Structure formats: structure tokens, C-alpha cells
Amino acid sequence: MTRAKARYLAILLPFGMAACSTSGAYPSLAQRDVERVSGSGTPAAVEEAAPVPALPPASADLVTRLAGLVKVAQAADRQFQSNRAAATRAVAASGGVGTDSWSTASVALAKLESSRSSGMGALADLDTLYADARDAAPLDESPSTLAITSARSEVAALLDAQDKVIADLSGRLKG
Image (cartoon, rainbow, N blue to C red; front, top):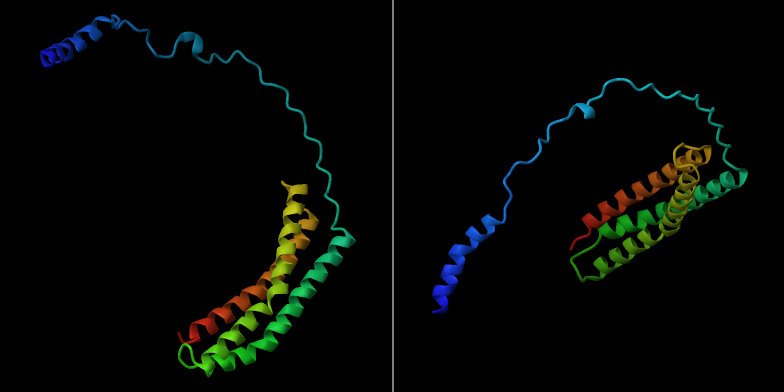
């Protein structure tokens, strides 16, 4: 009995919903005459922009700090280069995984990687200085930003070369 009522309700429900609808005489969505541009407006007066003042040069403190960070990275690179020969020899002499020569090569490679940590710290400091300089002058490349970018490029080039050496030695290490 309840199934028959449910079927009856399912058949009559759409007819009841159709009775609630409107006639369908809706206004047109076409553009009306009032909405058309007639060209009666006058353009606003344009004021001449004031000249933008030049940004100040990089401060002596910043230049000194940048030079110090570059020197730290160069010292780390010298340390890296001094450890490079030993790591290269150890990797060339390494045997299979778990042998003494392989362990020695792994330790030499780890020492090589750790010798560049102060250079990575210098790069992180340069990144922080760059972010601060961009916050101070977000729209223009200030002289401070240019000086930081130059120092950062120099340090990044050293670290990129070190990355290539480490990747090469890691790839040649058996295992």
C-alpha cells in the first residue's frame, strides 16, 4: 500500500512543481539605450607626476658587511678546495659498500660537504639582507639591492661550483 502511494506521489510531484512556476515573461537582457555611452562626459585633468627622488647609495656599513660575507664564503671555498684533493683520492680508491676504503671515502666526502657550511651561512645572510632591501624599496632596484645582488651572485657561484664537485664525487662513490 505504501509503495503505491510513493509511486503516485512521485508521478504527481513534478506536476505540482510546474504549477508553482511563473508565466515566463522576463525582461530582455539586451543593452538598453540608457546604458549606451553617448560621449557627453569630459575627461579628467591629468596632473603631472612629481619627479621620483633618487634612492640613496648603499651605506658604508652595508658595503663593509657585504665584503665580510664574501670573504667568509671565499675562506670556506679555500677550505673546500684544500679538502677536495683528499676526497677525490679517497673516492677513487673506494671499494664496495661497507669496506674500510668506502667508509674512508664517505667520511672524506662528509668532511668536504661540511667545509662549505660557513659559505652557506654567508649566502643565507645575503638572502636576508636582500629581502630586507626589497622590503625597503619594493618597486625600484636600489643601490643597496644592487650591491647585495652582486655579492650574492659571487657567493652563489662559489657554492654552485662546490655543488657540482660534490655531486660528481657522490656519483663516483660506489654503492
